Length: 292
Image (cartoon, rainbow, N blue to C red; front, side, top):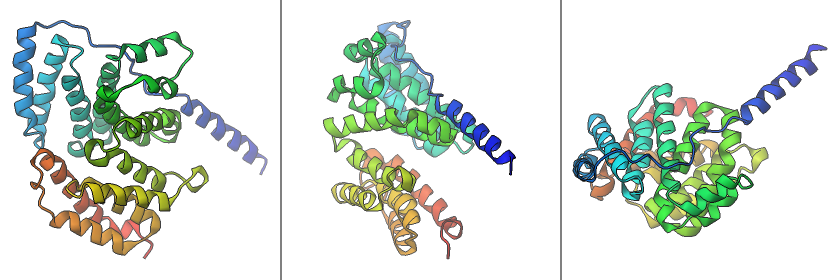
């Protein structure tokens, strides 16, 4: 019994050390090294390859071309946004090993910070040293929303997979970024902010403010506004239904996803196919996720 206080103190110390560890990428733009002609050619190739991003090799080829384009035009938000989103998508849907997922999301975050650095006012606030991302985010504009959203999403996934310490250390930034997206463009990427808050309020522990009512409200709002995006329905099953131990909703939501035509909205066909793969995986894990 005398060892218990020592063990608790050691555990607390380890947690505090872990909590101080934030994602290390800096808010600085990419150095311009390429020619304008090379960048334009790479961009055209990248945009064509992007349409086949459901295939891992095509996505990786697109990202390589976007990186060439970024070095030719470091302030091109279209290019930077595709890099943030593309690396996130690679980690979320096409990598299976944790190390590969973390590497992809880390790269996504790095490109996201390079993209946010295009906003000179935001970067200047951070460089002063007396403001953190959570307050400096106020100067970000609608032009910053794509990179802001995908950086927040990648940072959240990276932190969660990295463990509790990194989750706690990076959560204020993730929340601040998504709150700003909610303020600027609440409908971005098929009601992405509502989808995030729906997952958030279900995923956090009860002592941190878990609220399954808020979770379901956000998710139902996003589904009603954007039924074409299957990812929100998957989150309803994976987060809300599991935490609520509502097996009927879990099954019906995932079966609805599997029955949907992923090509109804061509611009998100790749994402919808990836969500159908998630739905199949979740159904295969049903016995592990529910008590009975």
